[in-house]
Image 1 (cartoon, rainbow, N blue to C red):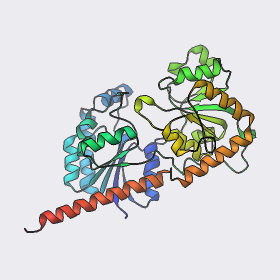
Image 2 (cartoon, rainbow, N blue to C red):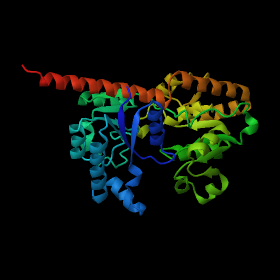
Image 3 (tube, one colour):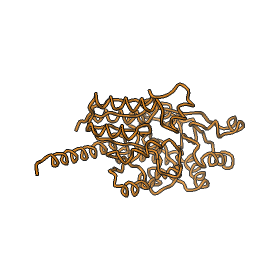
Image 4 (cartoon, rainbow, N blue to C red):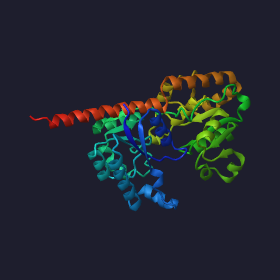
Length: 356
């Protein structure tokens, strides 16, 4: 059914929340944007402080404005994309006004990484009507808490992540091996070892690498900063092999980037896990590694066997499409579950209103 959805998230270019907003539009929902990017200070240090400790006038303002938006727009669903700023009184008022509250949060508030910023979330998460879960580790938690959830798949956006033009080949690829992402956990040392000890030509892109790589390494390695949207997609196209790592401190089963790489018909070489092996057939739709030695061996092999690499990349792309690893498929499941909760609530209210 077409629902009126107030979408609460950061709606800036390059944010995955923008991709989800567009997916809901493609699913013909009546979308009202509530852009959290407007609620920030000019001085970034204040933004960092507010993220760590979500209190003060800016937080009070975003809470008041959300209640006003719900009063004026009368949404059926308020969709929270990683709600870090909202207070229990705000969530309570939103629910009193009749909206179903959906929490879409790809990060992990309860894992061992303990990356901060979750103070308000810890106060409200039990109040929300539906949680979208991505990790097997979360299932037991939410079951024990008696919270409504739906287990969905990390997904790519079909508008942003798609294959290169017909006829694309190694002649169009100027990167041998690429890693695009953050320097989490042991990735800096892993990539250093690939480059220095195994003589693998790795190109590195992503945020904060300038803080991790030494001045000498920055001079010797192929690296650049953050890539977004078309620049990110085209870098996947121009790479013969694309690496993907699991963030263990975030209790990940599979990495989001794997689905984007596959959708772009890139050759995926990812850290081996049961979930990766469930999503892609090893040696047929993607390749995996469990050690740096295995990673280096597979890089050398597939750089020397382009036809096999092309076949695996094409099969991985087809698997991503047929298995519904796209935003539209996954978000349609969330909407259906939200509608079930909405109907059940309506039945309960009707029963409570009937005379005994």
